[in-house]
Length: 421
Image 1 (cartoon, one colour):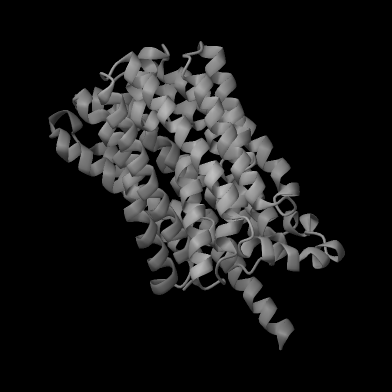
Image 2 (cartoon, helix red, strand yellow):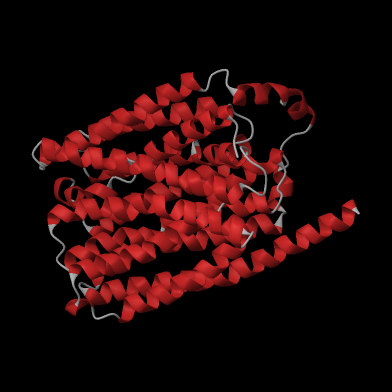
């Protein structure tokens, strides 16, 4: 599917995507240590994620303008290195307000500067028939990197005693990895295909600016953005499967970190290729794949609500949550692929990705806090059942929006065919 040079770029993009979010996603492997050593409640951890998302949302709006204009190699490298430096500060164990400040800056370094540019770089490696596979295998690669780095951090945590010192060492490990990858990416991508491509398009860009207005007026792009919104609102709930198993099933503390890594990272390796290949080869449409998996998500969430969790084995509980998580990760693998499916022009791809991210990741502004406060306000199984119910509501919204998206893409293709004829 890709040339040797494009595989090199793809591998670097995977490395970037798999390392930059380790610090902002510290909760995935260190949820309990964060509560203990940062002295945070479920709601306060949710607040940090929500502050991060507020800054991220503003950043995505700004990146609609510059994501098609700045050199990708520079923005991705700077974002990685700056994220690592923020992690060094985080290792000093700042107070609650310091933590909010760091997570706010993560919204700038990881999302505004990096994510839309990273997505555009992946999308441009293939044509519209390859988008599902590209993003699917990109998620798989991220899952591999995520898992290796996260389990290594847990190893560092255990090596230094599994307490305060181990937690601090784990944070510094994540920080050093981000800085090293940023430096590697900056030099490895210099003079590569991307630079030659930018040089060739320099004159063209002077005469033809990215059509921001056209993107904002494109109904299909907005539908894609809101379908991502629904997927991400459901995805936010996966974080709370960790305390769910710990509180309701009494999952041993030794398994909590390992489960968090499997839940957030290993599932990418499963969900990425499955989602991408089914979307491209079976359904021939990422938007149709989202429609069907939203239906499956609603069914699985209803099952999770009515199951007698108090009388079930912890391992059965883990399997049930992981099966649902796998479905969500197949959606995450392809939820930006409809941009390629819809035939958005190359000069507008970055703006479309930024708009999709601006709307799509907005649930993190309120979902983490909302879910966290529900769990604090309704201790025990009831709180989790309410959260699962809200996730099901977002999935139902996704069914409606993805159905409209399928119709919109079909109409766009018919209109293009008539014009060409």
